Image 1 (cartoon, rainbow, N blue to C red):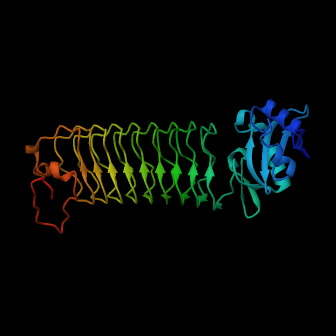
Image 2: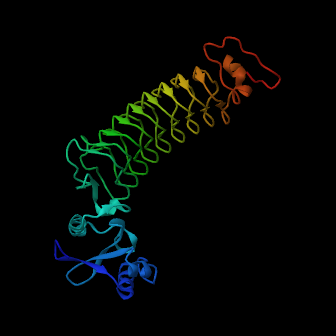
Length: 339
């Protein structure tokens, strides 16, 4: 099949052709690994080649579905070959299975769309993966809704401007170079992960996160901008926080603020469904601890002194049992200091 930019698609049908493709491209399609399936027709292998006959992309197809799309050394194909690759997929009407990102396309209702040029107000029912693409900025998807998950980790992004407006599943922007969350979705139905960046605050974060919220290993000195509520865990450990001002009001499961520089728990959530971990900080008092905690308080590694506040009288037992709520006005201790 002739393709744009003087490229050509070939179907490889012999062991010799597979071996040549494997040696030139540096992947494992040769050496007999695919010979039998190619021979009996259960697998088709295609090669996209230039006018000199040199391969630049290899496809594995089964049941009319792309299982793999590889460039050299199993990396993504080089960008300049994308027009030929995408024209080949559209002409053959392949379904997109594995390695969707390497094709630069998504498919919905029989139509193909470029992952970097989605229509305005588009609603995509699947997952969109832009991770490991060397992006310095996101394409403009600010009017797009992703009903599945969205990932853009391991890029060189410094902001989230252009991110989808709403994401029904998880949103993962970890391990980039973010200094701001401005542009993040307003609502994320699953987990939101902005860990391992260069954030100093959470301004721009979604208002509501249905799953977990991870912001560990940043440079946070403030939680200002954090979601108003988080359905699962909230984890801000390994930062430079000195207070919890700006934290969510409610956290459905556990709250982790350990390994910071906290001198106060003022600003902590009002309600934590499970554990509250404030260990390994600079706390001399537990004043400000959430009023309602469904699990245990973990405060190891702090220079706490019992005389500093009344709540420190609970310190040994409070690690292992729920804290009292407003409804429990009588507090009793046994010999193990349990409430």
